[in-house]
Image (cartoon, rainbow, N blue to C red; front, side):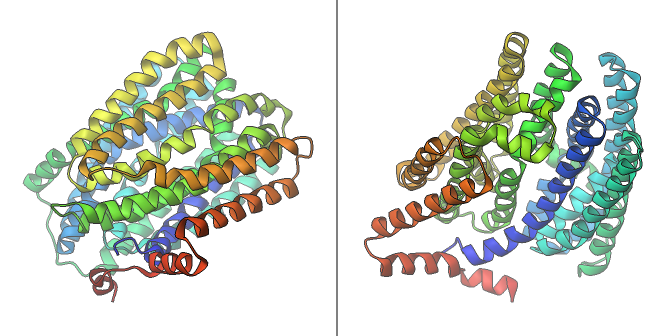
Length: 490
C-alpha cells in the first residue's frame, strides 16, 4: 500500500502547521489593518501582496519544484544545488524588482499605494531563498523544520503588528515588520541547509547554474503564468473598480485560506512520494492520488455548504466591520471553487512527478487566457460578482484540464466512487443549515458538522459492508507504508 495516511498525515501536518501560521498571520494582519485603518488601506495591502506573490514567482525562477525533484533523487547534490540556486536567485530577484518598478510606472497608482508595494518588494530576495531552502527540506522529508522556523516568526509578526497598529502606526510600519520577517526566516533556513544536511562541499559553477536555469525554465513558465493568472482579477478590479473593491474580494478569498492550506500541504507532502514511485504502470501513483482526492473532497464539501448559508455571518465574525458585508455574495460564489481545486491540487502533482510539466504549462496558460477573456467583461459589467464568477470559471477550466490527461495516464479515475459519499453527507448538512438559517451561531455550525461526519461514517460503513471491514480498511490506509518508506525514514 503506497498511500500511508499516518506517514503522509504526519508530514502534511508539519507543512500545515507552518502554512496555517503563515496564512493565519497574514489573515490576522489583514483583519487588524481592516479594523484599525479601514477598507482603503486593506485594499492597498491586498494589492501589494498580489503583486508581491506574482513577482516572487519570477524571483524564485522556477527553482523550488525542480530542486525538490532533483535532490529527492540524489541527496548528495544538496549543497551544489543550493549554492548555485542562491546565485541565480540574486540575479532573478534584481530583475523582478526592476520589472515591478516599471509596472508601477505604467499603472499609475497613487503615491501611497506605490510606496506600500515598493517597501514590500524588498522581501523578494529573502523570500526566494526561503522557497529553495524549504524545497530542500521537502526533498529530505524534513518538513518539521519548516514549522520550527516559521511558527515562532509568525507569532512575533502578529505581536509586533498588533503593537504598532494599537499605537496608531500606519501601514508602512506593518510592511516593515513583514520584510524583516522574510529576511530573518531566510537566514535561519540557510543555516539549516548548510549545517544540518550531510552533503559534500560544492563550488559555484557558471556552467552548472546555466544548465539549472535551462532545466527549470518550464517550471518558471508554469509558476510565472500562475502568478499572472492569480493577479489578473485583482488588477482588473483595481482599474475597472477601486482599491476598496480589491479589498472586499480579498476579504472573501481570505476566508477560504484555511482549507486551501490543507490542500496545499497534502499536495506538497505527496509530491516527493510520487517522485519516488514513478513506474511504467503508474498504479502506485493512482493509489496515492485517489485517496488524496477523496480525503480533500470530504473536507471541502461541508465548508462549501457552510459558506452558502452562513457567508455573511462568517465575514462578520472574522472582520467585525460592516463594510465587509458586501463581500458575502462573492464568498457564496467562490466557495464552489474549493471543490474544483481538489482535482487541480492532487492531479497536478501527478503531472509534475511524471515529468509532464509541459502539460502543466499548457494548463496554466489556458487558465490565464480564461481570466483575461472572461475577467474584463464580467468585472466591467458585474463588478465584484463578475470577479467571483471569473475565479470559478478559471478553476473549472483548470480542473478539467488536469483530470483529462491524468485520467488517461492512470487508466481512469473512479469519480463516482470518490464523490458520492461526501456529496450525500454534504446534502444532508445543507438541508439542516437551510432549516436553521435563522439561527446563525457557532453552535449551529458545530451541529451541522457533526451531522455531516455522522452521515459520512454511516455511508462509509454501508459501502464496506460491515463495521469490521470498515475498521480493516481504515487502519490499512492509516498504516499502509511500504518497506521502501520504512527504509528511508529509519
